[in-house]
Image (cartoon, rainbow, N blue to C red; front, side, top):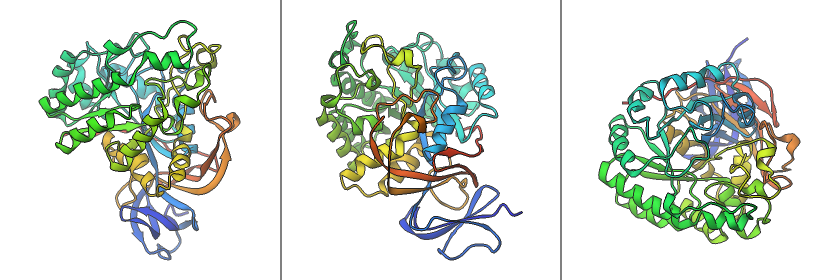
Length: 443
């Protein structure tokens, strides 16, 4: 039986835009993009009709947590959730696993834990801590996609924050390797503890937007000084968009991402005791949300990632106590639908999602994915942007189906997810796994 595949549709998301086409696949790779009615004789055909055919989505900000905290999330459950939601490749963050990914041995432990468990492809970020600067070249040689650092307490003691002095030592190394530094950008001097028993407003006040803005300014100065590339993680402050735009206009290699929860929710609408909404930086007021959308429209904020950071129910649902609850939102499976639901309400063209959810995250991580072009891995999704569904725990594949989106009606249903030519999910059900462990090639 042939392994040739043709995926055809009237709306295929190509680099030139949506158009009728057929994507031909052999050996798990895209071999051509041809006319809608064309393709090799005898190939298996998946006819998407007027559904959208997108490149497989790439999520460059996922906390898998295995090994060490697999009870929070693991490779099997995380990649199943990814596949059900149309994501065909994830990049695992260097924490909250034990050990964190800060040297070759810990990266090897990650890879051993992932082998045989992955429905979709998995790549890895390395971690930058005060004691791991000398490990940068070795981890780069093992194929990590870049490095992540915190400026503030990460929430886990084994991954401490870095100072400006550590960044000055690390950035020239990263610049020479051509790898980005990803930064949790909040200045520690402006952060204070949420009081015991605190509400959402207490959590919000403890992590003001000025902490993000100051961190972005500091990082912009370091980029200008060193020439190394820096990426701002999970931007929540709309006021920082102007700072980033000015830096990018000067040609500085600084980029930024945001997350669905910052684009969908607003602080004014969050119940004071709803700890499912706790994350860092916090979901800010409505004006920040609108400024983030403006930044995305302008290209200043280039991508939307999940920052999937799960925890067991007993850690997340702390009787409404924001001081005690774990900070993190599980949304890996819902990234496409949540983003599209909010974007469609603003009249944003569906084609914009390709860059935000696939092309830009793949580029950041140095993965040869995120577009439908000959030679690329045959990672494709077929989805209906007009179909609606209600978010219910029973339909989520995360290890713990806790979600602030529960009960929401969303637009955008993923019907088929294909990883390197093999169908891994249909209509929300995972039917196979075809994930590989990826390494970035660096100069």
